[in-house]
Structures are given as structure tokens and as C-alpha cells.
Image (cartoon, rainbow, N blue to C red; front, side):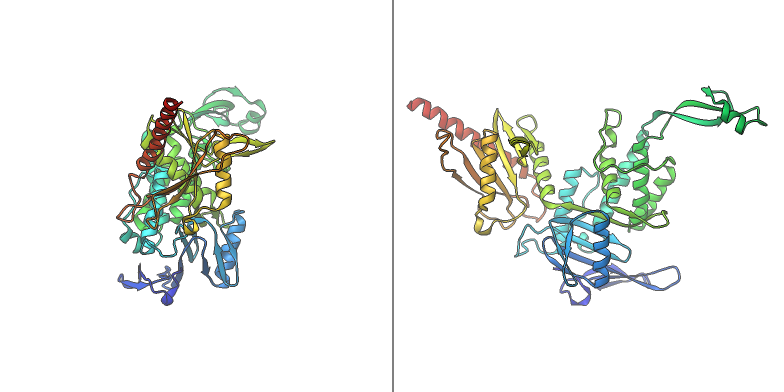
Length: 457
């Protein structure tokens, strides 16, 4: 599915800057530059794992941008791009590609791209704990660039909170020409710089200021945000904050989240969003701004993190939820289930799948993998967790065949279709509590069965 000009059956509303009126269109935004020349910007919307039609020039630019970041967001065909499991937005000068999730749902049970965008943004908001509200689906359908602007707004708000709270400082050693004698006098530099200026001293001394790498990363991300925000008020807000942010030197962008201390923990939300903006942005040749940015997320990983967040929120102290908990499998080969949930000492293994199994039957490879997980984690129950997009059966369960090596240890596989969405076509707020209740009921049944067997024995 793609929105392309007048050929698409769907349409949305974009601003028409010449008259201030709004004109219905589907894939192009017309703007005017300061000279009055009309500029056309292509806006494409597609779903994950689908083919999207593009021009040869659009394909070249998107593939070049992907190669620059060493990513695998899509593969090339003849004037098409085959999308992978990544969702989000890519914004280049004059071209925007928005990729939405679908969970392999051919019937499109959620009507309209605005609804899918709403679900995606809600999921991202919960996973990254963004301090902003997600617009309603109807508003999103009428607002191009809303996805990127939501991230920019969340980042700017988090950065504003840091500035109001007070930025972190650190000690560092500097060599400077000072008006007073402070620290160690550097004789060679003193003779070179101050031979005729006896009132100055070139010294090496410690200073305590905001020239901290975390403050540098936030400032660098603010420069990206100010250049990429499409909302006029949001762009002005980002530029204003940039003016008030200390001018600190740029630093190398880390590939992963830096380790935070008790003193820097308040930076977590702003820093996570800053790294999302910095790790997938491309500076202009002149180095004065950002010409392109991508906010793309592996939907499989995002669904896994969302399930973990919801379970932890519902469990509190009743259960421990571990993500990507790994164990040795064979030599140096290690395996790790998506989630391991421990309730009253009993472990449950969960493998999340952002797809719908054919005929509601899981693939043999998925069951084999789950079986290995259950034996290594000593779990009598393993769950393959799918999104219940089309309101399928709640859960299915069946025992694996008994192992010849461990005939007394039974392992049950559960195919669980999670109620990710509610009746309003948004995310189900009770999803975590419902899933946790299912696991707790399995534990109760196991305890009752064990007691019954002991009485019979």
C-alpha cells in the first residue's frame, strides 16, 4: 500500500502555502521558497514487508542513505523497494517515507494509516517513556510529519526539563591565558603569549563547568531537531532552547546508551531520544545542519520491549521480568528467549512474534526453539506470543512429546494471541495485566495438579 499522487484512493490534507487554504492531496506537498518558486515534496506511506513504488531518483537517494548508515531497511527492485521489518520515518530533502506496522494482517482490520500510526506512536511512547501525548488517529491522518515531530517534541521537552533542573558539571583540566595566577604556570607558553603582557598568566588549572559529553550530545541533537522539525512553533521552540543551551564542543556519537550514574540518571529520557536522532541523521556537506534523518525501529524488537514494559508495569513486585536473558547452549553458542518471567520461583519462557501464524498454527522452527528454551530454563510452560490483531482465539496449548532422556518432565507449549488493541483501535491498557493473569493461572493449575498427584500417591 502506498500513497502516490492522484492514483491513490486515500487522501489526506496538506497545507497549501500560496493562499493559506488547504487542498486535498495524497502524496505531494507543495511549498514555496523565499524566491516564490514552487517546491514539490513527495510523501510516501507504506506498510512493513511490502513493496513500495518509487522513482529511480527516489530509489537511488534512499539506497544511498541506507548504505551510509550500514542498515538493512529495504532491498531494491525495479523502481520498487521491498521493505523489511523496520517501521518509522525517513526524511530526506524533498522526500519523506513513512513505514507503518501491519502484523501480516491482509484484511487491514485497523482502518486507515492514521490508526496504524496512532498504534505505533503509542507503542513507542510507552517503550521510550516519551513525556508527550500522542495525537488522536484522526489528527495523525491529517498531519504529515507528525511522527517525526512527536519525537522532536518529546526530546525538546525532556531537554527543557534538564535545563530547568540544572545541567550536570564535571572537573576538567584546561590550559588558558588567564587574568589571574591560577594553577600551574606554563613557562614556555607564558613567554610566547605574554612577553609584553605581564598582567596575564598562561596556566594549567582545573575548572568545574558544564563541558560534559552528555551536554554535548544533547546540544548536537538539538541542532538536528531544530533543522528537522516541520511544525513552525516546534522548530522555533527547538531553536530557542538551542540559544540557551551552553556552547559545548561536539563529541563522537556512541552507538549505545552511555552508562549513567546517580548524578546523570535524569538525562536518560532526553539522551535516549537524542541518540535516536543522532545515530540516523546525516549532516550536510557544509556541516551547518542536517539534511536527512531516519527514525526506524525493528518492529519485532519493539513489540518485545513493549510486552516487557507492560508486564513489568502490571507485575510490580509479584514477578520478575528479564529481557534477552541468555544461557550457554553448545560450546560458545548462546541462546536467549525474548522474555523470562519468574513468578513465585516458577519460570515462564515467552517468545514474542510480531506476525500472525498461518491457520493459527505456529511454525515448526518456532516450536523447536521454544522447546529448547523451556528445557534450559527449566520451565514447564513456554508461550509463543502473537498480536491478536484479528481477534483470534485467546490461546491454544498442547504438551510436547515426552523426552526419552527426561520422561518425567512435561513441557507445554502455549500459542497465545495477545489483546494488544482495545475496542477503540488503540493500545489495550489492560494488556499487561491480562497476560500476567494468564501466567498466574497456569501457576495455580500446576500447584493444584501437584497437590492432587501427591494425595493420590
